[in-house]
Every structure is written in C-alpha cells, then in structure tokens.
Length: 237
Image (cartoon, rainbow, N blue to C red; front, top):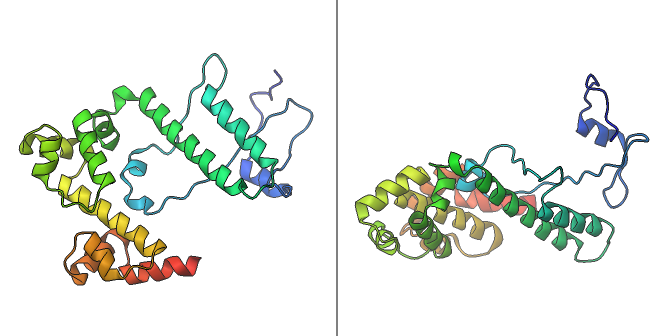
C-alpha cells in the first residue's frame, strides 16, 4: 500500500472539490498516480431536525468500524449500489439514491447502538433498548393522534403509572405527556408543509381545541406560527 509520509500537510477535501469540475453525474477526479480511492459523499435533510429526539441523541460523527481491515459487508454492498446508480441516468435515479441513503443512515445508527451498548444507559437511545419504554414510544409514534394518557401507556407497558413516568423521564429526558405533545407538533408541521388541510384541522389532529393554544405551542417549538411556517415551506419550493 502506498501512503503519503506522516508529515504531509493535509488538504481540505472541500477545497479539492471546488478546484475540480464534476461530470454530469456529479463525479469528480483528483490526485496523481497512487492507488485508486473512491469517496462517496452525500447529505440528508430532516424535517424538524431541531426537535428530533433521535438526532439530538446522536453524536456528530458515527464511525462504523470494519473487520480485519475491511468495511462491513452492508457498507460495501450499499456503496456498490450507489456507485452503480451514479452510472445510470434512469428516471428512478433520485428515488434509488434516497432509499440507499436511508439504508446507510439506519444501518449506521444501528451499528452505533451495537458498538456503544454500554454507553447508552440513559437518554433517548437507551429508551429504544428498554423493552417497555420502547413499546410506549412505538405506540405514540404509530398513532400520535390517539388520545393517549400516561395511565394508558403505563398499562400497555405493564408498569404502574408512577414507575412508567419515572422510567420514561429518566430514559427519554422528558415526561410522557411532553414527548407526545412534541411529536404531535412535529406531525402538524409535516401536514402544514405537505398538505392543504386547514390550520384548524391540523390543530385538532394535534390535540388542540383552540387555534390560539395550538399557535402558541407551535411557535414555541418551531420558532414561527403555523401560518408563517406553511408560507415559508411553500416559498422554498
């Protein structure tokens, strides 16, 4: 294997990208006569990322460790599909990229959980490892519009109300009712951005009986009121 000397001055990757003109497929080449190295770069955008419990719990960098000097088989397979997709100009190209990116993200998070099992004793990631609390989280995510109560979730988790509330707060970092309210407001944001439902309908689906209380809660979480949020999303399109 040919390597640069240890004292070689590092080069900013993004400076290299800016200095090269990519092909129509978004591929660029740089370097000299050394061994061929392929880098696959990309990005993902998450709606309401500032309020997303999973993203807040993840580290800024996830290193998926290989085995015996080789990448994990799922990394090699998914990246191979990405490289193959780069050569294609078919109409489903964007869809393929999106799904493969989803796979990489989900698998990377799964790898992080497996590699750091002893370090996730508390926090939202720990909640996913707790059989009873993860069941409650799954229930509210599956049907956030349902009139969940702490007592009902505790019953479905086979815990007393007090034990459930204490465990949920310790693992998730907030009480169950606040987590559910946050989830509903995130769902409301998605409806405002992608559907034409009236704000009154969105407020009702989020469990609010008045527009005033819904608008106040929505602005507290998302920084702007529901009307401004919807308008900004459509302007961006």
